Length: 321
Image (cartoon, rainbow, N blue to C red; front, side, top):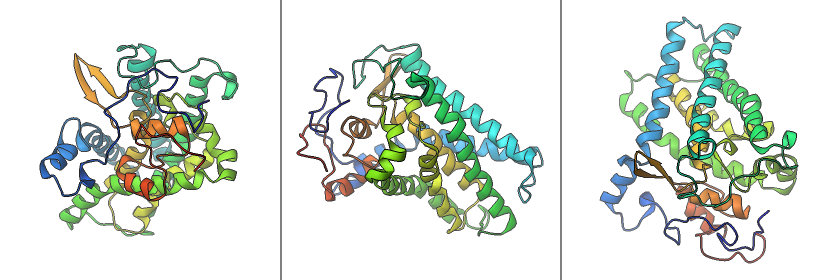
C-alpha cells in the first residue's frame, strides 16, 4: 500500500500527464472563452461523449417505461423489476466494456497507464480474496440495487405529487439549464460526502472497502460498501427540492452510476483505432494513491486548495492531512 508521503509514480513507473495539474477551463481567470468551449463541447470534452451518452440512456429508459405502460404512481413489482434488470444490464455492459478494453483484453497494454503494474489477482483485502470478483460483486449486488432504489422512490414521488415536477414544454430554458448544472451539482455533492466518508470512524467501517483498490480499474468505481452507496447516490435528493422531470432524474442517477468507470480506469488516454482520447481522472487517481488528497472532482480543485488537500502530481505531502 502506498504511503501518503511517497511522491507520485515513485514505485509505479507509469505514465503521467503534464504536471503540475492546473485548474480546468471553467475556473481559469481571466476567462479563456475558447478554452472553455473546448472543455465543455469538445470531443472528448465534458459533455461529449459521456454526458451525452448518459442522457441517451436516460431517454431510452424513459421510453421503455412509457412503452410498457408502467404506472409509476404505484410501487408495483413489474416496473421496479424492469428498471432493476435494465440497470444491471447497463452496468455489466458499461463497466464490462471498459474493463475488457483496458484490462481483460489489454488492447493497449500499459500505454498511458498511470501504474505500470496490473492490479493483483489475489489479495486478502478483498471479498473472496479476489479483487476483480469482489469489485464486481459489490457493484452489482449493492451498487445497482441502491441506484435503482433511489430512481424508483424519486420517480414514484414525482408521479404521486409528493415532490414538485415541471415539464420541458412548460419551462424549456429552466429544464435545459438544470440538465447543464446537474454535473456540477454532482461534483459538489461528491466532494461533501467524500470528505465525510474520510472521517476516521466512517473510513474504518465503510470507505476502506473502496480504498482497498490502490491500483484502480473500471470496476473499482462502483465497488463500495452499501452504506457508501447510500451516501454516493443521495445527490438525487436535490431533485426532491427543486422542480424536475423524470428525464432529469434518470439522467442524473445514470451519470452518478456510470461516470466512475472512466474516473477509475487508471489510464490517462484510451487508444481507439489509432486515436488517443484523453480522460480526466489523474486528479482522482492521486487520491487512490495518497488517500488524503484530491477529495473532489477536478472542478473542486479550489476547494481542495482551501483545505490544503490539493495534490498537483508533483509536491510531496508533509504529514497526514
